[in-house]
Image 1 (cartoon, helix red, strand yellow):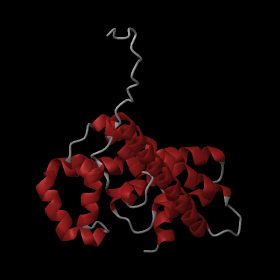
Image 2 (cartoon, rainbow, N blue to C red):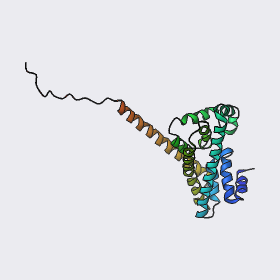
Image 3 (spheres, rainbow, N blue to C red):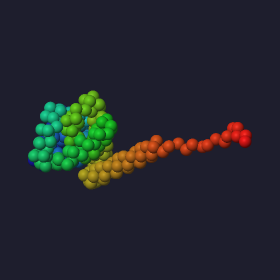
Image 4 (cartoon, rainbow, N blue to C red):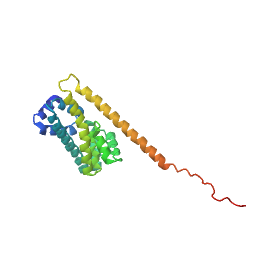
Length: 219
């Protein structure tokens, strides 16, 4: 079944089908999510439907992420690691990549989750180590929801704006993703430089200026 027929099948069921399609995209990464979102945007008749589709795809993505979170939390670290080592390569989840996702949670859990939802591939599997590490569920869901809207809205809107044009939505989506990733990398590097500068200032002892003697010693 090709991509267009798959999307058409889900669209037959309206917004419920769109929610299910967004959930499926989290578990079966057959094509990039930005392609799916832009193709969905091309099918929308008006602005009201665009708004409802943004909500529907965001709900589906969050539900899918919760599914990964529950799976990681239920199975635990050792069983998840065995599964990833054995079967991860079949779903684009190498064990080294899983370890990188797990290590990312050494930072702020909220921001790691939020930013992770705006990165290709990372946004699919980041919830798995989040469940294994038993992150606070409300923080995880809130960050996932915000990051998902930030990811879904631009691509759906761009697809909607390209209706009737001769532009290639896949090509445009690729460059939008590249620009988004470049911006995020620049922000992350800037924050790291800023934190190092602050840490360096904290480690540098204050300069002590010797005050002149108020009273001269009388021989």
